[in-house]
Structures are given as structure tokens and as C-alpha cells.
Length: 208
Image 1 (tube, one colour):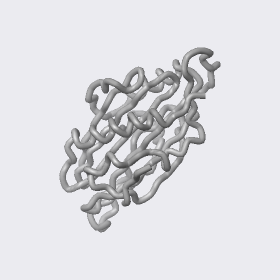
Image 2: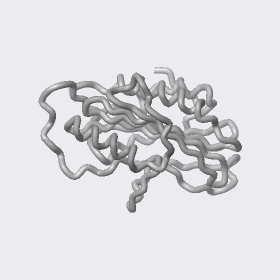
Image 3: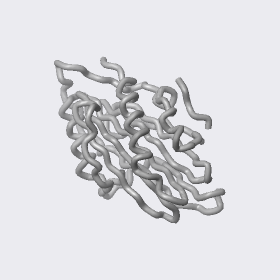
Image 4: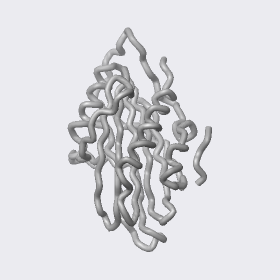
């Protein structure tokens, strides 16, 4: 698989997926920013007996996710973190990235596969309701339902985020891309690779 060489939740508990973002040349210590985590599931219902059922546990997304779509952003992979989702069984990878200007960014690909379609639909609904990112509308052609969100902030630098979440049967997929810089990365330049990665990541999750 070809590889490069190189949104927040309004909840009282900080479920932090470490995304360290630093300025040019590493001369300043900048705040830690991260995508939201799914709410933690409290019970495991009986699996749906019919229809496709996906299982992402044990999937090595750090190895399998194709990062070629990020080439236009000139990002280099600095490190990866395979910490799995907290809300439901599944797999994830947080890619820590660095730009040519020395700013750090992040890509998180997360596949949560709870026991039932209803649980995946709940996770999808909660994501849309609780994110502080601004809605960008539906994303046709991905899963049973998909939506995108974007956000721009200035924590000492220009920080642009873009997120797509997709629900397909009992699979809830997240692709979150964030890039820091001296100027904001245009939303369209984040949306195109995020959508491509989401589509290919859906195909990576096997059916049980």
C-alpha cells in the first residue's frame, strides 16, 4: 500500500485523543487539540441477526490506510497511534503529520463496530448533535448515511479541521483531518482527501 514519506464535544469529560500541534520550527509550545471521541457505550445489546455485520477489532488501520490522497497537502507522517475507539469495539489510527512550514496536523481514521445497527445509528446521531464543528452537509455515496463538518480556530496559528462520519450497517466510521499553518487550508483542500480516505477505509473493514 502506498504511503507518504514523510470535532470537539460539549461534554464535561475530556476524552482526549492526543493531537499535538506546534508552530513553525518548534519554537513555541502550543495547545493540544483533538477530535471528539464517541460517547462510551454503557451496554452491549443483542447482535442484529440479519443483514451485513462488520467487525473492525484487530484491524491495523495504521498500516492499511492509504495516505496518497494527502499528497496535495505536502504532509509528512511523524508518528502513528493505534489506540482503539472508546465507545465500541473497533480499530483506529491517529497519524501525526507535519507540514513543510513546520506546523503539525493530524489525521484520525476510526472504525467503531458495535453489536447492532441501532447502536451505530445512535453513535452517528450523537456525533452530529454534540460536535462543535459546523455542518457542511451530507456526503452522498458513502454508507447508509454520511455527513461532513468543518471548523477553523486560531490557537496561536491558523488551524483548519474537516470531519466526515459515516454509518453503514453496524459500522460507524470517522475520518478527521486537521492541519495547522500560517494561513488556513481551504476547506475544499481538506474535504477531497478526507472523502477519498473515508471511501477506501470503508472497504477495509471486513464483514463477520
